[in-house]
Every structure is written in structure tokens, then in C-alpha cells.
Length: 551
Image (cartoon, rainbow, N blue to C red; front, side, top):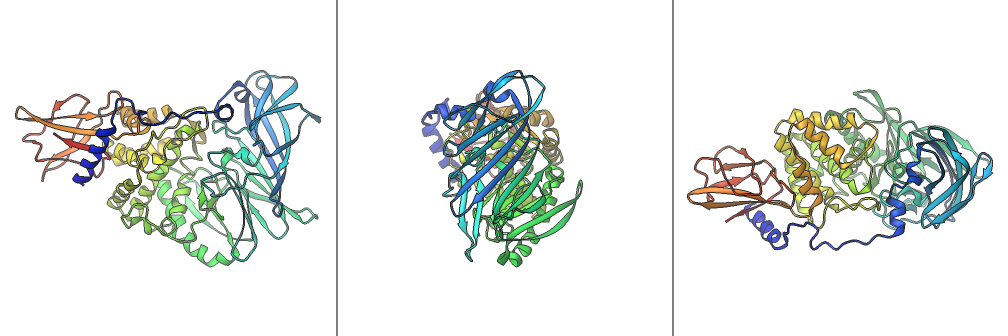
């Protein structure tokens, strides 16, 4: 361990600077990026209340056609607004009060002008009709679009996955994370003989008498656009219930018919334990009204709210692998646990800007270790989160650039999870930490949030200013280095860090003794531990992801 940390230090000192961006190429963004990611008055002028998405899938032609009804409340007086639809899909018409509205397009943004001023606080609606061949995802869920494939016996199998790139890759909407629709009706028409499974609860199945069947799914809770899904295949269904914190939670499973026995075993061994663990740590499952679903998909998985996409082939681990290298990751199904963890962090609490996707992924990555802790004990959970460090790149900041729909480094997963575990260690009170995690989900229930809201809440509840810790690990690519120096018969230490005022408390001890907290700053100060020297000092590098340098 000591050798690894010294190697980290050596590498860090080579590249370290007061500016974390040094060596990280400055990204260039386009007008299209700004239209997609920026909150202009043409977007903030209206608040989405309800969608009715009604789409027909012509699977043979890989073609979709249909409409989306926008019901909204005006937040100010306006005559013009923006919605979003990828340019390869055609806007057939936009209808308002029985009349077609003029519109213009710029990249993937569509602008409509109303015949008269929409007054602040008024409620209104318009409907967009569209069609075309949507973008086909080549490697879902890492790239966005629609997956058109076949199952192992030759039946059509179709799924959508569009986090990051945005839902406007396959349907028209106000495509920004800050505004979640309050409720939605999702109507998907598919060739008769196949089923569609989408979010929420199935309201109705209608034989359209033209070779197609429509499935109507209703979502009663606020939902982000990228979570809305269509999954089409030859499915079979089974169900269960879980006695949870808010009553009986319905558990519905939609799987390919020939995988029924495997699904019953795998889901039975994982789902209820997962919900038990996360309700303990995070509070009640946030969407009892819409239920909990797992849906087998041709891609690996995605946190589609109340309808988690599952493609882990009924294996424990991540496609049979342990991402921590500890053995703990092979005792449970990674996709069930990770993607379901997003129901709390990602779906219940959603970042306003994609740049803050760490709010989704860091907490959900950390949820894996909490699940293990609940099942196998705290030491097992700590070993797991420590083991995931082998995947950390320290390549660029975890937080991406704002207002251009761009996420930061993939270190938001493993580095972010380790950061949260360090914060738990600093707080040094597991019940308080649990109350913070539950409090986040209660305070920001069904809300979109910012970096400042999350960090300030944790600071207030912890009774500690942890802002420099979040700043260092999220805004800068380097990890902090704890630097010891023996001078004039006494041991001194300091932090080498990018974040202003970095003063993270850290656990140290004399070999063979008990750990105790010290609070170094970026200036050398004496280590107030009797008889400490550079030869007998030990730093808790198991719970802390830091470098250690002893001069």
C-alpha cells in the first residue's frame, strides 16, 4: 500500500500545478451545444406539466411516427419558445388550438411562435407531430438512440437508451434536465404479437385492427426525459410485492419468455435485498405510485425510472466480473443494484445540468458498497469501495462544463464513490451519515438540484465545512498529497492540493497505535502526536484516497 501511494505521489508531483486544468485540453463547443445545454428565456419561459407521447414503431423499416402533447404553465409572458428534436427526424406539424404554428429549426432545436402572447401563470398546450428514422445506437447505453435487434430465437427486440445525448434523439420534448414533467402518458404502438414495456403502470392495451397494438403506460410522478423508455419484444410477465417503508411496493418483471426461470431465480435473490438496503440508507423508494419494474433489454442497463432496463444476462457481478477485484462484487447482480440505486440518486434527485452528473453516479457507485455492507457487514463494504480505486484515471475533472450538455470524467463513478466514503469517515458517525443520505432524498424529493445545494446540505447536516473536499475531488483532476517533513526534532505536515483552503481532516497513527484525526492545511504545521516521526507515522490510506509524501 505504501509503495502504491508513493508511486501516486511521484506521478502527481510531476503533473501537479495550482491550476487543475493544466495539461487538460480546453474543449471547444458549438452553437448546437449551447442550444442543447443552455437555459435561455425561450426554455425557461414555460414549465412542463404533462406529456402524452404517442409513437408507432415500424420495426422492419426502423421508422417511428407519432406525436407528443406538451401541456405547460407559463413562467412569464412570451410569444416564442424552444423545444428539441434531432434534425434527422422530421417535424410534420405543430398544432395549437386547431391551427398549425410556424416554426424554424436550428440544429436540433425547434422554435415556435404563437399567434398572441402567452400570459404568465396561464396553462396552455400544443402538439408536435413528427416522423423519421431515429439514430440507431451502436453501443447502447454508452451511445444514445434506438436499438433494433432480435432475440436469440429471432423475435424483434427493440429498446431506447438516451442518457446524456438526450431524449430528443427519438421524441420531441423540452430536452433539459432542469425541468421534469409532472406526469406523462406513454403510448407505444407495436406490431401485434409483441409487447411494449415503458415506465409507470400499464393502463390499457388496444388492438388497433391494423396489425398494431398500442400499450398505454401512465407515470404519476415527475420524470426526466431521458428516463422515458420504449422496450419492445416477446415478453412474459411475473410479479411480486415488497413490504416497504411506505406500504406494499409492487414488483413487476418483464423478461423474454425463454428466460423466465433464470429471471425468477436471479431477481428473487437480489431485488428485495436491494430495496431493503436502499430504503435503510436512503429512505423510501421514491416512486411507490408507479411501482418498481425490471425489464430485460438488448443493452446492458439503464436507470429508467420505475422501469429499470436489465441486460446483465442473469449473472452476478458486472457481466460475471468483479469491478472491485475483492470478490465481494461477485455475490450480487451489479445491474440490479447499481441501476436501481439511481431511483434515489438520478431519478428522485436529478442534477439540473449534465455537468453535475456526479450527483447521479458518485452516490450510486457508493450505493453498491452500502448494499454490500447491509448484506455482509461494514468491513465488506469498505473493502469493496477501496477495491474500485484500480479503475480511477485522474484524467480530468469530474464536473464537466456547464450549459453545453457535457459531463465530466468517468471518474465520477469510482473516484466519486471513494470521495463519499472519505466524507463518511471524516463525519465519523454512521447514524449521522445515514441521516444525511436519507435527508438528501427527503429534502430534495422529486427535485432537480445543483452542486451547491447538495454540498451545502451535507455541510449543514454534518456540522463541518467539507466544501474544500468536494472542490478538490470534483473540480480538479489531481488527488491531494499529505506531505510530511521532519524538522528540528519534530514532525510537520501539510496538504499539497489545488482547492483553496484545503484542510481535510485525516486519520493518522503511530505504528501499532490507534488512529486519530489531524487537520492539516496547505502550510506546514506540527503533527500533534507525541513521539511521531517520519519513520513511525502511518496514514489511513485504506479509507482515504490520497497520496502520501514523506521528505
